[in-house]
Each structure stands twice: as C-alpha cells, then as structure tokens.
Image 1 (cartoon, rainbow, N blue to C red):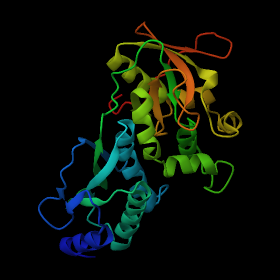
Image 2 (image 1 turned 45 degrees about the vertical axis):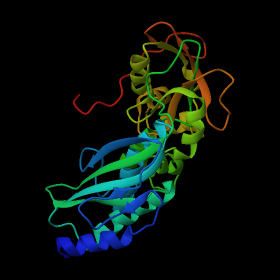
Image 3 (image 1 turned 180 degrees about the vertical axis):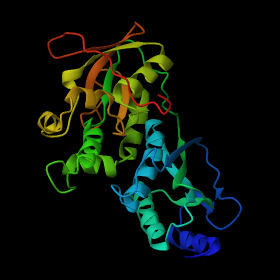
Image 4 (image 1 turned 180 degrees about the horizontal axis):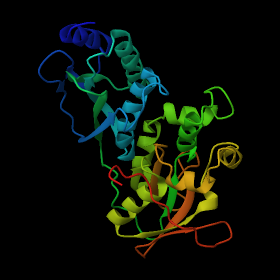
Amino acid sequence: MSTEHQRIARIRALFARSSPSISLGIGDDCAVLAASARARVWTVDAAIENVHFVRGPMRDEEIGFRALMAAASDIAAMGADATGILCALALPAAFRDDELDDLLSGYAEAADAIGCPVVGGNLTRAAELSITTSVLGEVEQAVTRAGARPGDGVFVSGALGGAALGLHALRAGHAREGAYAECIQRFLRPRARLDLSARLATCASAAIDISDGLAQDLAHLCSASRVGVRLDVSALPRPARFAELAGALGRDADELVLAGGEDYELLFTAELGGVPPEVGVQIGTVTETSVVELVGGDGRPVPLPEGFDHFR
C-alpha cells in the first residue's frame, strides 16, 4: 500500500496537463488560474459510497467517470466552458493502489472527454469512499434558472429515463452487454452536455441540468423564473424500445422519464423557432401561471411525480 505522498505523486503524474487557462496546477498549496475577462462560474458535487453509488455492482473506473461528469453537468447548464477541476478524495484505509488507479483512470477519462484539466485537490482517509469534485468555468453571460418568459418553448437536449432504467436493470442482475446495454451505459457513464453549452448560451432564456428528475428540476426552473409550464409527456424523447424494456422490469415508463433522474441532459427555455433540432426537442410551453401542468397525448392531466430528495 502506497503512502499518502506516494499516492499524491501518482495523482500528479496522471493529471499532468497543460492548458492556457492554468498558470499553476497540481503540486502547490493552490492552483493558479490565468486572469480572464469572462465571468467565472464554480460548482461542487459530492459522490459518496452507499449514497450515490455502491462498489461491486459499479466498477471503480465507472465511479470515477460518473463523479466528474455529474459535477461538470452544472457548468454545461450555465452555458459555460469548463476550465479547471479540483478533486477531493476520501479513501477507506483498505483501499488498494490498483483500486485507486482504476478510480483515477475513469476520472481522467471523463476529464479528457470534456477537455478540462484537473488542477488540484485533496487526499484523506475516511470510513467510506467519497469523491468531491469542484469544476470551474467561464462564460460571457451565464444562463440561469430565472430567465424563462411566458410564451417561450420548453426544450430538452436528449432522451430521458435511460439512466434510471439502467440502474434498475443492474439491480435486477442484467448484463452490461444485453438488451439493457444502452440504458446501463447511460447510468454508468453519463455525459455532461458541454458539447452544447456554447449553443445554449446563444439561445436559452433559462436552463437547468436534469439530475433529480425532469419534473422536479422543471419545478426548480419555474420557481426561479416565477412562471408555469404546460408539458406534453408524450413528446418527451426516450431511448429505443424504452416502454418495452421498462415494462419487462415492471417499471412505468412515464414515471422513469419524469422522475428517474441522473440523465444529465439539459432542460431549457427559449423563444419558439430559435432552437436548432440538434440542440433540443420542444416538450412544452412556458405559461403565466405558477403551475407545472403535465398532460398526456390525449390532453388529459398526468400526475406530477416527486424526484430525488436526499432527506426524504
């Protein structure tokens, strides 16, 4: 088992990257970021064993990958570019070097996928594995939750419900390569939609990433903007064969799409006609009321489900 300082040296070697935005990276008391004329955005997210993930069903590299992508998703929702990552690792005393290497390889893969360097962090011992990620970004004008206007369309950047169904499939013992492969992949290796952040910044009036479930995150956006929404549940994009696969596991497809969470797609509002199809699919309309109204394809009301809550 390596010492703390030997492990820090391994981490420093793995994440050694050059970037114009970073003047000084891992190895000193602080990282130093180059000055910028753009606004800075920061976010932090924690992934804790037996709360956000369970080791065994999830491989260590998948845990690392997922922890970073979940944090980076908040940067995408602001229409920003990611410029630096800080990672605080708390490891159990029995956590082996090879397990650490696997965890870090997944984390590094995610950092490379979004093109953002890891510039520092912290390493300590704890009873359970914990990964706390801070992501820094830059943007000309941040897209917030508070700009939605009556008459705007409501859009989503991709298919929903797959991550939740993938988690249920894993718990039911389905293989990663079987019928549920796409959904399992959506859960284990989500993608922060930083590929869309620049486009989002030019067209969105308000935005949020979908982490706690579409219905709950939409309610957050409506509350911040002081508007309501009429949403067509039948218009929500879903993975291929979704209803069939959900039914085979005894799950309600609409409930997974509305409340499953952890899709990390972008939910945003924008003027009608101003969103290219590759950026988002319209699923509803912003209204002057303060109500989130869900309707089915037949126009009948659909009950509003609850999303994830750490303390419920």
